[in-house]
Length: 309
Image (cartoon, rainbow, N blue to C red; front, side, top):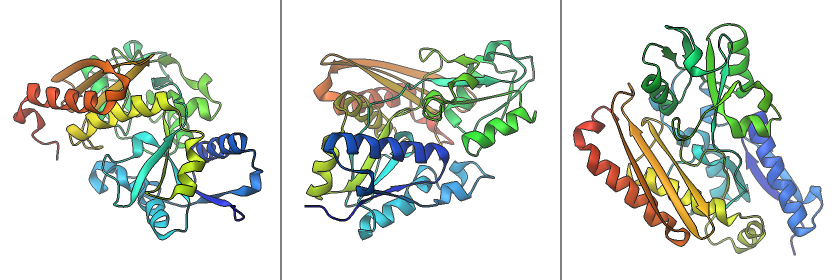
């Protein structure tokens, strides 16, 4: 019987702490355990410390997970809570994604200071975004707009917006909801026109492969619908070798035992794109995502990916 508290690793941002707290609350409810059986351990990651450069220049998505994964592998943490879209498609040997919480809204939120929506912005307006996907989608719809790299915590970006450094920014609606800040959004982007990042809005839990004690604990809060949808999206990413260097969008919708996937790749300037739609049984989610990634890669041809790094 477990006597020591389970150690939950997380980043220290308000959003990361909200996600870790939600995970703890769900585990307490599922197992009837008191709060003191779960210790939230905050670690600073390289991605948190480097805020003046695009992630693609300094190592990519793994910068938000490396320190947590090192402590998982050493046994200092029992499991770690992540934003799923921050997770590389290839994990360190010995680690796996063990569970997903029920997914929040996966759409993007436009937050405008000088206009309420993207199409209402003046010609030559400036939007701040650190996401190559969002940058490419903005340029696709508004090539007259200037897009600049805009990193930092949600609160930092909103403060920069309020200070007038940019006319608008975009953030994940899921993050705003988890921070009880949905009211700051001035437009919710239609995913058919402005598709989200694969795995956006989903919280995942990473643990050691074969740690049955932890796996049994986490299985009680694993949401199968989210598991299937995000597994499909991550398979799409993996087939494209997707990272934060690449403008890739995609989302899967589960309807009963059926799954429908929509994916999109763009050039960074938003001028060229290739899309794909596939559907099939939910229990073949990984195959559907991988097939979609292969199809869109073949349709685009090798020259499309020049410069993706």
